[in-house]
Amino acid sequence: MPYISIESGRLTAEQKKELIERLTETASEITHIPEQFFTVTIKELPDENFGIVGKSIDEIKRKYNR
Image (cartoon, rainbow, N blue to C red):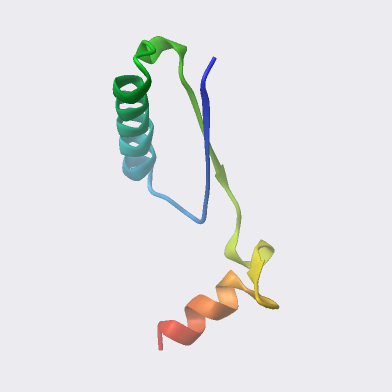
C-alpha cells in the first residue's frame, strides 16, 4: 500500500482536503496504482516544536513577518 506523509505547520481544513485529493490523484496517475490503495497522513507540528539552524520555526517566522 503506497503511503504519503506530509509534515506541516497549521493548515486549514480546506488545504488538508485539497492536499489529500491532489496528492492521491497525482500519485495514482504517476504510479498507475488505483487511488483506493493510497493512504495520506498529515502530521501537524507546532512551529515552536521544530527547529532549523538552532532556532525554532516560530522564531524564524516572527523575524520574517515584521
